[in-house]
Length: 169
Image 1 (cartoon, helix red, strand yellow):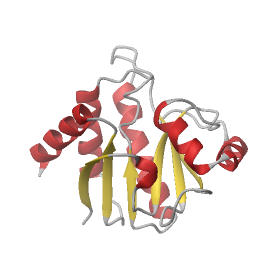
Image 2: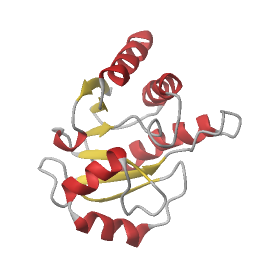
Image 3: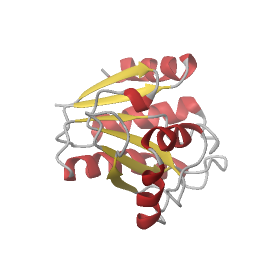
Image 4: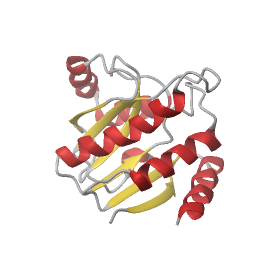
């Protein structure tokens, strides 16, 4: 059974097989967590992403981790939904981001993965709703992973994820 943890910090420094980045459809880098991942991994990450693009919302693809420090071997790029008020299928797309990322990790034979709070930055997804979807989806999606870590950049996101995780334990 998978162990789900919440931590606060820099996702590019996690001790996991793969990290997930909240990408845009071009997979060539952007702001927020995606920008941080691209800066840490180096320019080859954008080149590898461009070769796989476009990636539609709710999907996920993997590239090598390039300059990220081992044990991180892969970056899984997933495109979250842009928040349009909640009536345009955003919840289903966000849940798909988590499910598809787990499937990609399983296909790669990985044992551990770290996720950011997908779509809660510039895409505007309400953080409390996003935390609920993340935890619920991770709890109910079969996976061969042994560790899933949700990495929050700030205290408020960490608190939302921790609270949501405690509700479903």
